[in-house]
Length: 272
Image (cartoon, rainbow, N blue to C red):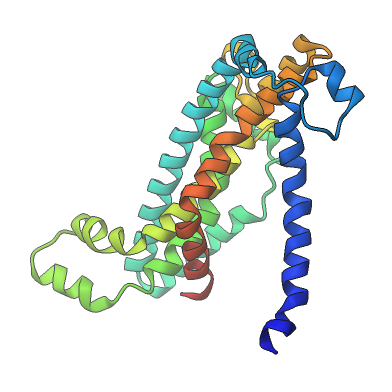
């Protein structure tokens, strides 16, 4: 009887899974077709699996965009998680009033949309000499992902038993040693969650990448695919192969870290 009551839920979830997965499967299947076959039979499987589309996409520029995105994403993710963890630790150790002031400042960062700060950030980056460099993307990515990462990590840090901190203090641990040996090991899930969210944002961000970087040599995948599309004209099979290569890293990150991601979101949403 209970299984029968859950049947509608399973049906809804199955339909939702098909709706979400079908465009990805279509893109994957079409990436092995020629442009002519995509137009002639858009819904069918490839008659000839053109694996060379991926080699052509990689050689036509995806390789450079991929490596640029990889560098920007890794640096932005590591910096965001490191700064957010340190800031959350400081909030945890501060007095109640001081921690609340910092928390309000962090919350203020959540209400500022990236699009609103486009022109002020352009002027600031220009004054710092960072325009048309990878740092023109990395610095804004870190700044805009820090508030959410701080809130998630802080909520888990608040749940760390005070007895462990007192025991580490009695053993002679410094404040940084307590942070490294007590707080970080107990917060792996939420750290992984913050890393996944930051990596997803940095890998797919388009606006800053297209406005603050003019050099084609420094473009990341979202910005580079615009010129990639123009360069390929109507070669949709190769373009879709490029899109698959662009989406693959984030999909793999979610697949391998989904257990930590779900656990981190659950911990960060109910604690603190």
